[in-house]
Image (cartoon, rainbow, N blue to C red):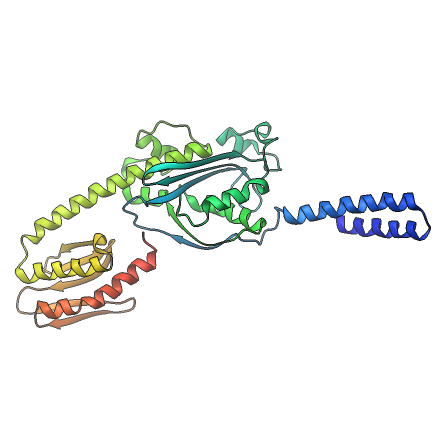
Length: 348
């Protein structure tokens, strides 16, 4: 509509020029300039397209067993749940390195639309609080620079990334690849469902005895970090218990089984996968090995017939083997499959 009006103003101005009406020409010329600038601004900061993306590829990191050396935690408050039709009204970002906060950012944002009463009831952010705040296009480049290239952590973080995806795209800012950790997923893997009524952040916060306000961006970032740390501690204690149980089992193994496990650990260590290994003994004395709870293979090194299971993504093959050395020589097949399991789930 503005473009049509601009064309009309230009035609009227040109008509005035032909008729030597200088005042009319200047009047319509000024209006034309104002319309042109307005159109350019709208083009640059048009936050209403629905088909623009700002994040090309996502990689979720699963089975996280330790805190990354460096990462950021994000949390958004919004006017609703639609990343297309709703708007960001607050953003919190906290950057961690070696377990310490090295940078934080918190901003209320003018959404340029009314905040529904339902949203205010959740986060206590009112229209008056954001009326004179910066608009998203005024802060989005800073947010982009904080996030780009970082491992992003959040609670149900797909929600937050969805809004940022749209906001980045509408400002022509593109992140090619983003790795993220969803603390909600870690909570599901860590806390017994019988011990907690639901997995909402406020409920998990109370479960761990974390004393902090909820439903404000910066507070929720800090709470998510605390939940993350508590879950990692539980997982470390669980892994330690498993390792102790495995060491006890090893003492009961024969020399062939002990040698095979020793060589398997050495091989996986060269692939930086040793910490993902677990195993248990089945009723027929077959040893079952797993990578992050995904079956890697089985081996039987007792009795008259030695056997070894070799897996790939499509097949299960049982090999008759002469001795433990043949099993060790076949570890290259297990290594290939272990890398497939890790790559398939984008684990950290």
